[in-house]
Length: 334
Image 1 (cartoon, one colour):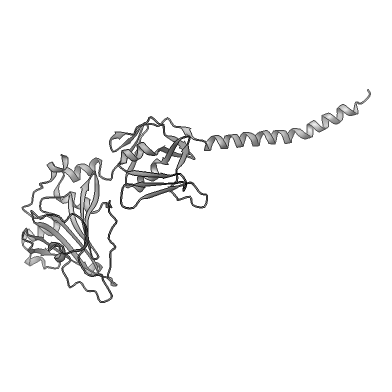
Image 2 (cartoon, helix red, strand yellow):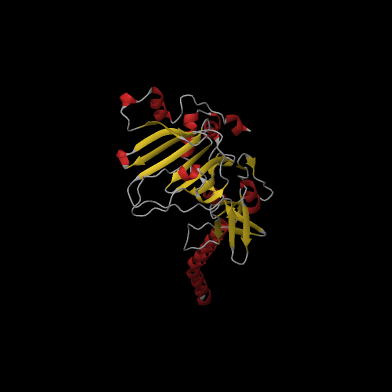
């Protein structure tokens, strides 16, 4: 049989090109799959609840690069924040507290930067990242994502309706937020540690605290512990600083410096817990400040147990006066 050299050459070339063709097809499929995975995708999980209210879902959330993104405008309205979209700078400023959140276009160099995405005419922000930065918590179920303020669920019941002692203890351990820039705290150049907490008699939803030379009033508002007043209650500390001063004296006389917020009115005594010292050598004082702003020391951890009255022992154990009863639960629920 006569061999057709031209046909054989064509067949040989075709066989050589087949692996290359298959590789090209495979690369094309992989690239298409990659583009498909990074492209915005509508998500089935559209039931997003923020502080008990469903998020306006006229514009559907999207999954972008594995993150659940929500439209900026309805999200900002739901959390009570204002926002500014700077198209030239390609930057979003989200403002709820004194310190604004800045979101920029995603850069490979900074994977921790808060980012946003523009899809069509709508701007999307990452639900989880932004919510956590604002102080909210996230709880996910099979059907919805719940965005809650720090005071919710059992903690909310404990703070608003529960035992006075447990409520006070829970509140002072929550991280605070402020709609006004915090005053800079000056600290002594020493290992001395101190803390001051003062609650109005019968209350657990607001307290005064001293950090360094700054006194702050913390109040529960919209299920957040919020700083609503601050002022300097001592001269800035230096190397010669000692604790031989009353950290509440200037405050009670309404002579704190650089105050912001409204100076609170005193219509009931303040129950205080004042700790000072070094580590295991610290001492805690318990007492109250009367309406006429006189201090009454009721007990201290350094006292010998034998000379402590039963009332003093109870105060030191519970941070509560023996005759105190809670008066702010109804107010909180309203």
